[in-house]
Length: 410
Image (cartoon, rainbow, N blue to C red; front, side):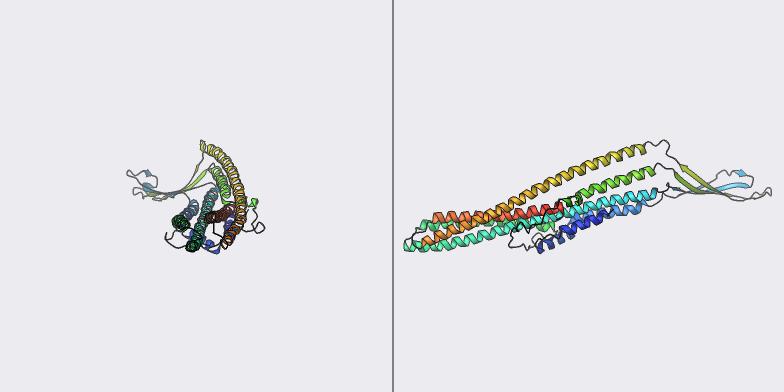
């Protein structure tokens, strides 16, 4: 049986090897290293591992001492004081069972580290692509504003030669102001998301982030195929396997508790010599080895714990089945949403080609007659919406891909 830590480590290596921008992987590494939540889970795991060392100890050794106020008189002399030592020993295999149980709890705590790491990786990835979208939208608005300024110059020239009216110039300037307002809103949203991103990395919230400047949706042939079989290796499912195993080990330890405990000890009694007569072994001290046994004859708790452990295992199996259904549902929804993002992206590209052609027709008409600035503004607004929708489609595609990677280890 492959050790659970080995399986989980492989899963982490797989999820970090997906074809994201190199800078994103760098940020993920920083987050995994610095994030306080991850560090907290790692400390909990260290505590759980240390409890394994605690479990291999024996019960406290008992020491006793007594002084005879009224010295009992024996044939060989009066008894002065008594010393005793006693050690209780668990039944054979109990310490090993206790160690295995503690180790299984440590394994279960390790899955919590892995789940937290994978969730952090997903959150960092989602925040990164949100930054990309907000940055790209600002760039599109800047380009549109520059284009409007260009047409504003054309309109001003048209006013001078009588081809257009000053009203059209004002319309273009109003549109520029509206777009600049949107750009500033996106800028503020970007700064807010930047703070959230830096805090995920546990670094200065004002640190600059190198976000990739351009992204495209890969072709369907380049798209990584979803491997549903990898779902079984998801840490959120491995956690239930680890919990099930810990209950199994708890039951083995419980059965060992049904055995007797052995005790070994030694009593030493100091005896003074008799002065009134000379006897054999006069004043000879007494050494008395002792053996004791503790048997749980009337202990009903063991049978009760056995039933509790059985019920707990059934509960874990039901929880795992529920989690499988949830992850499968999330995977199906993410897959469909990613396909929808691709469809939207391809549609926006087709629409953009037609919108650009319409713009070119309007500009060519300007060479022979007065330009229709109302139609031009409509076309530019249409182009802007297409570009913003395309960016949103790209963002959604990569967000859904990140969720698919989280679920399947792709």
